[in-house]
Image (cartoon, rainbow, N blue to C red; front, top):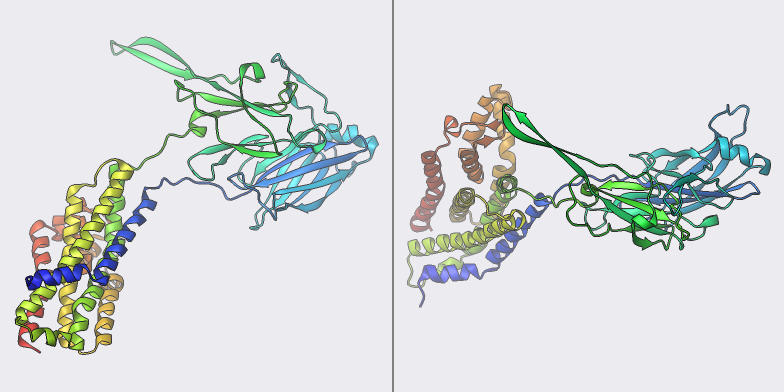
Amino acid sequence: MAHPILYDIRKVLLSKTVLISMILLIGISFFLISSFSVSVTTTNSTNTQILSWYESSGTYHYLVFETNQYGQAVSGVTIQGNLSSSFFSQSTVPTYQGPTVTTNSSGEAQFTIKVPASDINEVNANYTVPVIIHEPNGDVYSAGGQPAIYSPFTTLPNGSSINVPVSPGQIVLVASSSLVGGFSGSITTVTDASNSEQEDLMVTWAGNNGSLPTSYSLYYAFFNETQTCTTGQIGGIGAVSCSSSFSQPSSLSESNTTFFANMTSYEQVFSPPKLEANLGNGSQIGFGLFSSNGFEVTPPVYYSISQLYPVAQTVSSSQAGSFVVSFLTTIYGYFIPLIAIVGSYNLYGKDRVSGVLESVLAQPVSRRGLALSRFFSTFAGMVIAIAISMGVVDALVLYYTKSLLNTMILVASAGAFFVELGAFIGIMMVLSRVIKSSGLLIGIGIGLFIIFDFLWSILILLVLAVSRVGINSAAYLGYQVAAEFLNPSQFVQLVITYLTSSSSIGLVSPAKYGITIPSLVVTGILWVVVPLAGFLYLAIKRD
């Protein structure tokens, strides 16, 4: 027959309590992933793109497109636009008011504004299109303000540019903006829906008279930075000074760019083209939208390489260490005592209160042997669960930072958790010797967990209020450290303070507050030995 302790350890390791504790701790470890994710700020406002064309009869048509920061359609946005004079007093010339429309499930809306045919030339020359946008979340902002119809920048196939008079049915962009930005154009950027660190391109356009832009194509070209270096003398020592510059072409043509994609709908989102090799940090990429006859229908847009092709941001090992320390002293610090309390109750206290242990004592085993066997088997099972979960933490750090966690912090933290584990197991087993009700036993255990983990800081504040000690003062930290020595669930915080010299009020000298290796060792031993000794005494001397 196996040794009683080995038998109990095997029984504990295969128990539901330990297996659930192990799964819970491992699952909690994965909450660290959110700390390793690089935070990217995005806007929640909608993007407004409005295309327009007019008929010789005096009817102005408007196509409205509303998207979120990812280029996805937004419904329920209301838009109201007018044709108003930008050069004359509104008391002398009329304002032509448009209806209020709401975007559909495709993020689209349409409206028209009718003006007398005789006033078309005046409207085209002197009127603008201010637009008011009401978002579903209550935000309101204005857009547009561009000329009602203007002569857009146009590039001929040979690269020269001219101003082409806008004819009836020809498309112009009269609004392209959001709550947090100004006019952005037909080609703009949005956040990639699956990778917040990546920017995509969003292109908005239409064919003549609002038809689908199936005869338009997007082209691109990379432009490398120009680096100029000069040699000089600094303090009698030869030195080379280099500067980088970049000149944006005022226009693009199909002959000096590369085909990228054809337009198939009014608004499309594209991932950037493959990055060329040997481009400097100051290099840029330009995009142009061309009609089937080779004309560039919108001004070219340029983006820096770093904007469209961001370098993957990683978390350094020092940052990871800071994240892990915070994680261990908060999340783990809360769960370890709870697991120890519940585990001790299920693996010993419940049997003790229900009388199951009395039948075990009928076997050839001493009270001391049974008590030690149950204590160390429970402790060993929980230690293995903690060790595996700490291994998962280290593996996560390795995966995200390509380096292991500081060995001293990992080992010392694990040791501190073992102390907490032993303390709460011992306390629960002591309580199981004096409490006869299983409900009262688990209730007191949970009560201790709440006091030590959540109410302890409130008790400290009450003492400070009575003592008239200011929060975040040196005296405050002294009270806090003293309270941590008296609380087994905060033993890991003492260890972390010793290793990092950091506290709730900033950097400190641990020794000044009594946090030294001898004090930590003595405190750790006392928190394990005193409850264990009390438990053994009661188990042997008291029924």
